[in-house]
Length: 501
Image 1: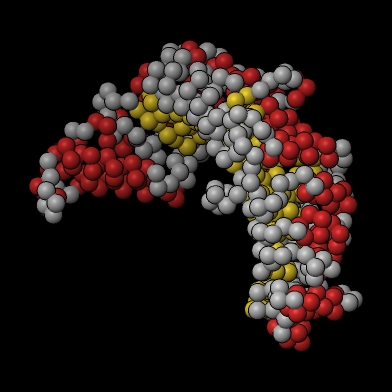
Image 2: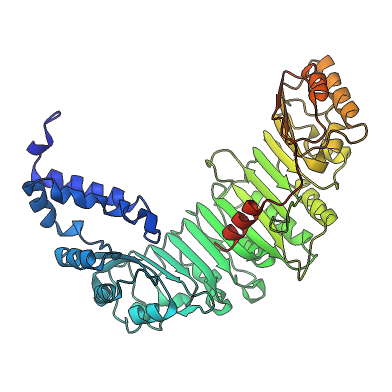
């Protein structure tokens, strides 16, 4: 009855409320993050409210089937209260936090385990998983993460007797494995990081048997396309996210085998070791944007970012992102190329040529927002050719060395242009301000004035320059910040952290 006090609710309703509290608490943080472990235990407070609530909670076995192994005594109590219900086991084994005996005992009855997430060193993983050759009929998700830096963990042969009929999610980090170890026909999520070449070798063919896959993430020694069947065609109609990290030629080769829905988000971090890259990159981009398969229509680009500049060695050599503005904050397509200076360092002119090669083939007719930072391999005719006639392009953000040549193109092009933003630009370059004010004045005189002009992290920009621009645009947004050329070590650390996952 609406408005009734909670004390009048029947026991079964209270039980469901307790279950919701438990699930919300468990989803509040990672089991590997000690900061969030207390939040994951907050639901237990329902057992201390009154005698009735405590009795209900203690008699509901499914409330206790996700033991908190960070406190071994609590985990043992929860396992006892879970009785014979399916178990969901999650533990991060470190030097300071090792409830090993309790966890090992819980892992002995594989037939009861519905979910298993373990982060541990190789010898601990061996103790937990060796000899586990009985089937795992209830297993819904499996995540094994080896914490050993040098040695990868070799999954035991005949693990779970290769019988995992309910397996939906599989994540293997720092592990060597064989794709035949698991029944993967019902997988919806697959994550493999830093597996060896032998482990990855059979993955492309294995993907053929995963029609329900919606999330695919592969990192490390991706299968070489030399070893993959040339006629291989993988249909993943439900795929919504694919992330690849490894040698770019191998990333591109794998993408070529997969029919990816146009609604799926694609992220590639590719390592470049040779200068012969243009054809591979163009073929990869063409595949992503012009699939023309029964599964997928062509992609639409409404937002585009292209950056070939690099402030520090930690930054990507080449960054390309494109979005249709329908997939939230995540770009529809993201490609980052990282060179290895010890093997091959991509020069600026090569990076700019790569940018021009893909701009020449992209479907830009729907483009609304553009962010461009290049080194100097673009001139005014390139801007006019790629972007000048686009009648939906409203917002353009230009950085660094891109600005002078872009300025030369704006007087006669960009029919829908409303907003321009310059960042890291030197306004003291010879004749730059004259060219900029001249182009803006022409647009203003023709009734096509820029509505908003942003000046961010500028050089040699003063109140005098600001006064000139204010007379030619609708609104001038100047942050008064002077740009300094220096390495941002926070950015560097963040990049390498993201690169290694």
